[in-house]
Image (cartoon, rainbow, N blue to C red):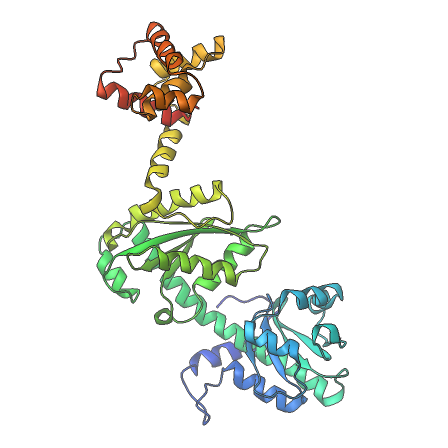
Length: 417
């Protein structure tokens, strides 16, 4: 076991104790490491309604007691996190800064504009690491035995959170390793899928990147935590982190559930976090490496487009993906620099002609002079004259179907207008 030197032996012992007795139940039917039971017990001692939150102000547990409850607490419990407007109030009052700096309980005065009675908050810490906080509703600062009970309760909550993290991290590590094996092409893909608790059916790979303007990694870790929270059987997908990308394997052939999964992730993260995602085509377990590549290419499309657009799926965006691959090949110098398209491009640059645009319009119109002229905003005779002049510059052979196809590909690869 590796632990921060600041973590006390009693905390380490508590974590081990919780892990060993994790499956044992009390007379009430709850295990000894149940945060809701702890919140109830703490509320009875301090005489106020209790909520336990993680370091991102998400509600982990709350007491059944409604003593000194208020509208702000009810709203927080309903949405499972402190609303943004309340977070802004606490931020302006320096509450979060004081919780980060001290282990002493902090009092927050009433604010009837936001439905707040008073609050007493205390940091939940393991060594130097801030794990979360405990909040108690109260009209005035707690003193004496009630204040001591709140501080002791925070230390007990730290043991619970450490135990929970140890269990969750083990499950996440096993799941992540198995998902990576599938994405990299496991020889026993069907067996790996079974070990993940998934049925042998078509699946889709979802690739996600999450970041803010100031920081990239924190948002991605939050996304991974959301994707892997809960027992495996209670979640539709299985996830892993590779580099700066979150990959999730989601059972099902349809695109809609994958987009709903991304929408759920976006709603769970703070509003200022930007999410980009791509969805691979439905694939059998042994085809998931191809699904991963498709998801990555769709992710690149989404990052290049509007941030509020729906994440692209390979089934619907294969043509854009193909053009993207062609353009990548052209940028890497893997397409011929010489040939009709290159010759016309150089002529346009030297003489200010529009031969490349004219050739594109004619090809897209499938040889219809009137349609090509309408696209260009010129007379059909102008298109005819330009084609004749182009044939004098470079051999086009527009009657040859293979040559026409090669010209279309060459124009698409370079993205000429």
